[in-house]
Amino acid sequence: MKLCIELKKRDKTVSVNKSAATIVASSVATLLIQNKQILLGRRFEKKADEKNFIGWQCPGGYLQKGESVEQAAQKFCIQKAGIELTKMHPGPYTNNVFSEQLHTTTLYVIGEGYRVVNRSQFENEQFQWSWFEFDQLPDLLFLPLTFLVPEIKSGCYD
Image (spheres, one colour):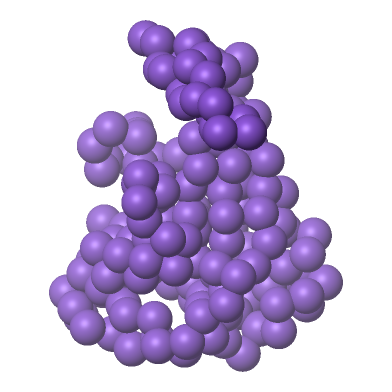
């Protein structure tokens, strides 16, 4: 798959062909933290069943064209966890190399306030949204989150 990127340089438009394999996708995830606990849910590959479970994660997903990081964070919190952010600010980022074919960045938002707007989504047994103590995180975390564990455990986000 080829993508054409137009670069503006001194009033000139230059077309550059880039292979999709050279593009790094950006995702957005929200660190919801309260009382030295972080909200995590189960992540699945393809469909939600035990054999497809790949780790615990924060609410998040891929950033879409034209969407701000804050809009994406709000959307994914509502869609995936049934919560609306009432206060947020920019957080850290991670550079995630899953394999030779998959490389992403994750842009984190720190959720400082929230309210549950869809209780059935928040209490979904399949995704098991749960609060975890910083020093008692689950063993299997989704890769981008593993990069933040030292910072989380040190209390950087209290």
